[in-house]
Image 1 (tube, rainbow, N blue to C red):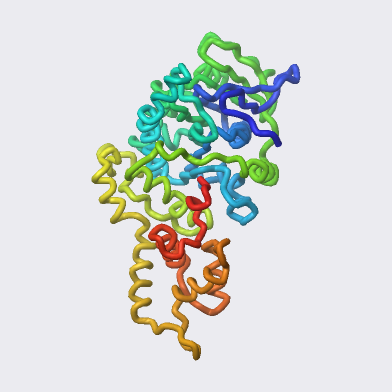
Image 2 (image 1 turned 180 degrees about the horizontal axis):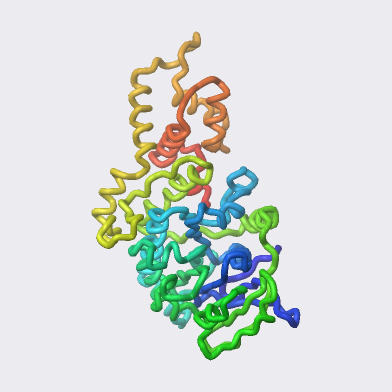
Length: 420
């Protein structure tokens, strides 16, 4: 599978005349609308496939329906088949989605300042996107949960701001929804969505809400699920198309394995302070949820109910840092504190045997592994095989401290490997 570039068209299906349906996403946000069972999710996976093939585009997912869109892409990484995930961040609940959108807004602000000279040298009004400075594409499944009238007011406001402000620095949104009406999508946001796709619908009025009332849809244009209509830009023609079948996890897994080696990382100047802490701790919060454990707390008091005034304003950086120090992963913090007490009281292993202190044994395992190090799960498995009982979160907290605080540093974290 060959790489693409976000500076070129992203394919997602074919037309009746056998030409490829492909859209420009460098400067445009996208909206896909369709009723349940119309093939809307399959279309979104085709767009995901096009984005992960781009070495100059990071992909973030907001998937509030249990991460169903994201899990097939993360499967090879979660199962140990690849060294890194092809999706750079997944938000499976509202607090994590708020954290993600706050970081995206910070990326927009910092890139405008950090890369002002690059844009000037290139003599363009948009930041050139490369493998070193990749675009950030937030793919949102079922947008009503995040942007509708019943969604979190803070999350909705963040997404609208990203849609309005992120074009010049390459931070864009791709979203799907059941309808294109104002109860699902704010009018401010809808006006900025240049790429519009309408999948099969029962009521023709739904297509009119998307493309305008002057358009007269023909039911023959969308005869079965997977067929749709699309328009690139407000003045472009509406064209029928059919998306490729990308519904099987095995097919998505093949794409993920083929693309993981050229996935980019977020450039250093894009984040700082509290937002960087949020970004670097994303998988520690999200992975337990993907593995079936309770999710870790986002290091900020988010507003899941969507009521104005609830939650911490991350624009107040000093306050956010203070809260992050208190609230970051409370379960791990408690386990780590208990582990410190256990370490002081537990007897050290001697030459004649005796009690095994878990953290000391962990360090011995890392010594034996040599410079290649061990993953956290490998350390935990080895300890349990030896009958050493220790919580998974405790092991990961020890490893995180050793790697970050200058201890052994042999636990190869995503950040130390150069992963996203």
